[in-house]
Figure (tube, rainbow, N blue to C red):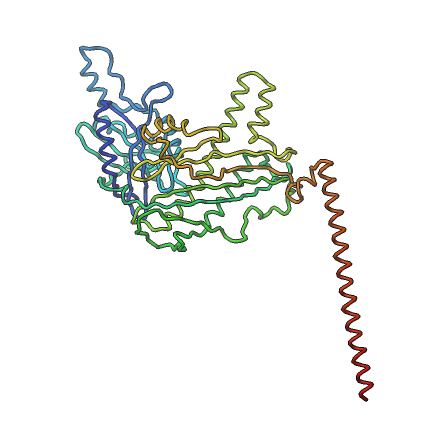
Length: 491
């Protein structure tokens, strides 16, 4: 249970000044930071306001005060004491999108509300519902943590308070528990860990009878889920030293992490011997990962955060290409061109292909991850399709993170030089060279010529070997005969 929360003073004071200058009577947004149950502490890095929805309406507002000028001030006072009106689904969608931009050790850990004291107390129910929606849209990786933070910034009177919102199926007065909240230096003390994970994953494609997950999308999700289980058991070497569970790190600078998978252990092969394999899906590439650690946390926590960041980064890319594939099908169907729709569904949307029926190899390039500075040397990320440039990220970053100064082209890091790619191969492409299975007559002729040349060379080698063998035997017999003659003459 988190009992104390430390917030980055520079960022929180800046957020408070921004809210005061805006003059808005109410606002909600996301709390970015990290929760650690072992330390019973939470760390707040920044507050990110939720942007207006697609209709241009704010995510949080007070009830309408009315149009009567004579009673305007009275109705305004009544509105400020009324419960907040919050677009819960929109705030949750904002949390989902922002969580994809955060690296290891950073999460959407809760919600903040800018409102009067009276309005906040009258909105406990809707605020708890919003916190639960945010937790569902941006869950922590491999964590059963059932709590999130709810920070209230009051302007009447001016003060900050923090509560721990306990998640559950029901919401009651006991769902909100007070936390000790302070401001100080948080970001400057974070330790940085970096890892480049190279992988070559080969997933079997089964016949229709052997597996119900036959589409490319199903094979990808199930296959990478299995690989993620292997990755969890990987050992880690940091700066050349094998990591132990209780080891602490106090040195500054960027620490380099290398993950070591268990040798000759492949969970994908378990139980496959009785199934008919008709092809192989090959997923290769490189994932660059960062994580940030508090000095009071053990190094093993950084390793777990790195593993989680790698797995979530791949999941995010799978979601991007799957969402894009579905949009292509919907757009093509809406145009009413059935032929074009069919072409798109078989070419652009190869994720829907039934792999056991496909006889042609297909390939797919994944979005690449780019990094840009965020706060105090820490990075956040976004994803680019192969045909996109970094220019398309500016509006995305401005809308989600409310920062216009992040997307300076000179500060962007494109560290994933080796693109992640996916190809499918038939069974015969794997067990034999593709030219033997699908080669042309010319290629077959070339193979025959090479085979004939190989046979001729083999015959010459055998003849040479026979000559040397006969010579050696003759020399041995001659030596025995000469020795026998000398023995007789001596006697």
